[in-house]
Image (cartoon, rainbow, N blue to C red; front, side):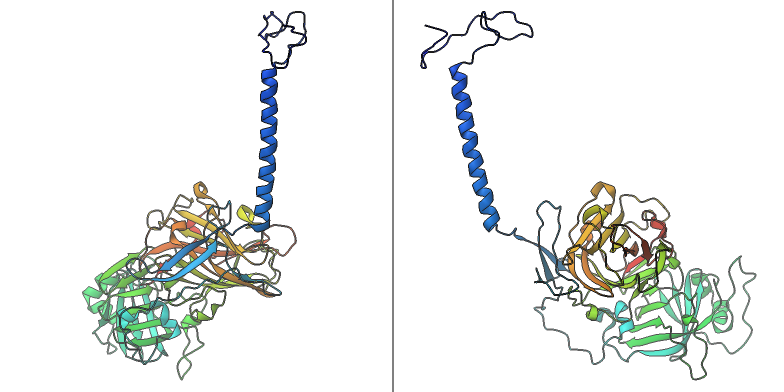
Length: 528
């Protein structure tokens, strides 16, 4: 057998190795080994297999690009929780590669694009016989505290009356001119009619008031000074009695009252303290069972139901108190006409980039909130004279977008200025294509990324509108009920230039100075 000219079908035996530098087998008298025909066949087969695989992959890719089928739609059901029937369905296309992104319909400036989907939140018809319709409906101001099951039908329309209000350490006192009755409310969620009447006699003294507290006078002072139960329930007054205008509506099972900012509501033009800049808003939904819900004119919010009373923690009222009523029939289509007129909250305090902010038309807004067992429903109307969306993903704050902050465990860490695992910072905006909502969760850092978001938006020459449903699950909340409270704030970032940047920030909470200090946020209360 000739090693130098072997037959193609002969096996070439392994030759004796020599100790060459670097190791390895070398043929005697040769600088490099000659390749075995066995290896040649294997290499040839591998090359042929690779060519076949490459051609096949190219054909599959070309076929997919010419006729790719859409990813099945993801479905998010929105309802009031088990066993209550689901009230609607939100559908959207899952973006490949995203964590859980839901594409939604947005109407941009200019020609309206072909919608990708329609998102609605509407009641499912009940299988039971519906109740007899009420002859009178709740007024707009009363809607956030109204429930047909709790209050029954309205007995009167909404009216504006003269009233008096005084805050105390552990509650407040109220007088209404239409009923000529006085009431007291405790922070524990109880309220009661005051039977005592004042005939002008001097108010009994309970000694010198503690520092920064005052003794009430006139009718409130008489009831407080003569009835030990009222004194024990309320403590000392924290401010003097003030007259104000109140919107009030009577129901079969109670009444709902809210301070009004009208100039005056009396024939002789008495000054309405509720129209002043330092007034602390009053909202009371008083049920005949002796419990109430709403916001006192101080730093504590309470919520109650006829069968239970819940005391709710709150941030300082100056940071903002934002109420979310149970969601009714809402269509998340960017049209805010189905939201009550009286329940808007302002986004108006410039907290960053004051030198770049050119006024309300440049960047400002208003918002409302509602809730279901599935999530927080948000309606936002923003004024912006130059719409410049930020980049997608983590840098979306470098453009026009919302910043939502929520403390899911308000009671547990209400005084902690550092963001922890229960403090959330979420961006919501309209993407650069002008057609889709985008969202991103920055905090907590451990779960940063894209989040599911149902809703729609509309852009115009004067600003943009967003309606969205934010699932509780993305906020670390497993279940909710009326009376729950959370730390909350909503801000808008503004950019008028062509470069991605954050030129200014306008906030609902005047206290906001940074993105990760929960003590600067306001309070969100879920009304029963």
